[in-house]
Amino acid sequence: MRPALLRAVHDGTRLEPVSLELGTDGLKLTIGRRQYFFPFVTYPNGERDAYATLAACARAAAADGIDLLGCASCVRFRFSGMSQQFSGGEAGYCALAGFRSTRGIVSIDHGCGEFIKADGWPGDLDAAYRSRMNVADSEPRPSRLNAFEGAIVGLAAGDALGHPAEFHRRADIIRTFGPDGIQDFVAVGDPAWRTPFHGTHHPAGTYTDDTQMSLAVAEALVDWNRGDLETLMQGMASRFADWSRSPENDRSPGATTMTACGKLASGVKWREAGVPNSKGCGSAMRVAPIGLFFWRDIPRLLEAARASSLITHGHDAAVESSAAAALLVALAMSKRNPEEMFQTLMEECAPRSPDLKACLERLPRLLQEDPAEALSARGLGEGWVAEEAVVSALYCFWRNPLDFRAAVLSAVNTDGDSDSIACIVGGISGAFNGLSAIPESWQKEVENGGGLIDVARRLCHAAESSG
Figure 1 (tube, helix red, strand yellow):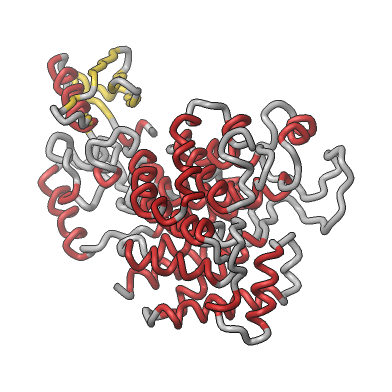
Figure 2: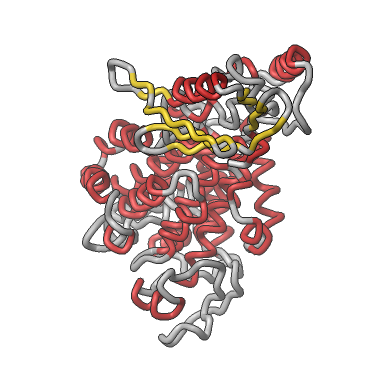
């Protein structure tokens, strides 16, 4: 976390640098040369309370003459459980990140969209409190714009990073780019590859059909105006058909998707166009906008995500994996931790698809395995089918919940469908951590960066203005 979000005053005069580290067993607070460690406050039912633990650290520091000052930028004071212990905010962390949930705590500087940055520190805490309450009264529904932007740019960045790695084995990636594999945008068909390239060359930062179709879903949601499901699906189907005939469709789209789009273009209705027994990941990779739009309405989200899969992919694994992928984005918007995400998928989606359930059940035991093992045919699979792509994305996020870069790169450097897995996890991590968690160079260099932000903002406005 950035030092500006948490400060300490020693003897009433001297500001001390502060850092906060959440470990597996407790919380370590470093103030200047002093360190305070407390094991997590644990309730009889086993729940850990990270916030109460931080309060204990603060009291120990106070006994040494050190006052801990929290971030004064949070404008939703009424929702902040620890604002009463500190001068405002969550001592640099947001209560909406998951009460009593260690992994769910997210640094405010990751841009959850719940804050307005304040310069300096308020001398009059009563005035600061009133100011925050006034904003909360005027904006009773907090904006999630930063999360919308993070998810849309994040899915595109992950997709673009994985684009050149698709159809390459991990061994080939490592042999070409070194032991860490791909670490930045690489041109498709880059001469560094030792294997012959046959296809269309694209510059570094170019995304694939995964992002193109995600944007089509987003545009359909923006134009939907809260009509019925039939209207929404017709809008998506129309955009899919238009995209399939566009010259931009030159990035190895899946055969199932193209078959279905051909039917749509010939006038077949959306419910009848999909390939019934196909469970490729083509429908799960594009549903992040559904998760964003319906993040407050899970029943509607599941209905829309499942229907959107039927336009192209009809197998129950594809349908439920699409629901799961959209649900993961919505849960990320709510700052649920990975364990909660996993349990929710097991409850909502796994019972409806034996294949998805079996893949999810393998995930917990593979969390300690290196991505080279977990994201392979020996682990979760290579991601070419829907359940493998979605569960692999959850694996990448679970291992790196606060690190967008690490999460997507672990997806990129795999044997299988690198771009789709990275696209899915990019949307999840982007929604969870916000736009500011994505490296600035990736924000600037990804294809159509300005257009991605525009779509995210219009989608956010449509979601928040229509209920």
